[in-house]
Length: 299
Ligand code: PAF
Image (cartoon, rainbow, N blue to C red; front, side, top):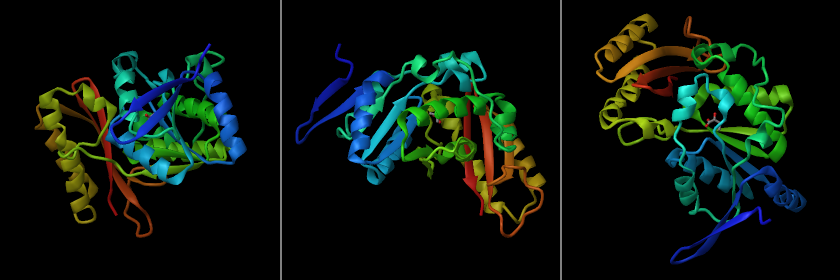
């Protein structure tokens, strides 16, 4: 049986094709020949519903590696709630269409559940040194165990040299750096800047689920973050928290889940500003059922 599926996309001025692998067995041989070439692999893990943010990660990975592997896998163990998992956008056909703009050095890997979870769909537990207990960890119990478990499988199977993550999920980025230390994976973790819509809303697969009015109102998140950045160090953090809470109370579509100013490396809430430390403001908010997160560097 032909397992590797080659999609030919004939474009007016250039001929390109991308390679899509629908299970680990199918990509194995290609991985072996990449290793024999001693070529480098940049890995961009995704859960699909691709947008410009993902494309920019792929472009960065493409510029820095010989091959790029983009995975599409909606990881069940990182959802702490079944409805959120069920409602997560599934748009593989559109995703593959978007990926056609890249040439055949960009490989798409859509693993089977058994490739990632050969022993059943369960999370491994990780001690990330405490960063897992802040913010997302508090509100989404088990989330980072699920992220650690799926990435452990991917890093083990694909052995990438570099892996690329957006800073929108800043806590996830720190968790992944820690995971690599714990599991002694030989991979560089590279954080990439947040891409935003013209409105300022951080690009996210979940934005596809927003109504027009929710989309319109969601611009508040970045507006508030910019305000906090402007006043960081002049207004005290309690005052800022109060103002942020009021801004959300007055919004018809959004409900604030948390607002936090935290030390960038420990992710612990700010106690007292110290000169040699870096801080970020983080927000999680709901627009109806859709959970949105964002953050901004403050200094
Ligand atoms: O950021 C995501 O989309 C996911 O958490 C990831 C890294 C693909 C793991 O499932």
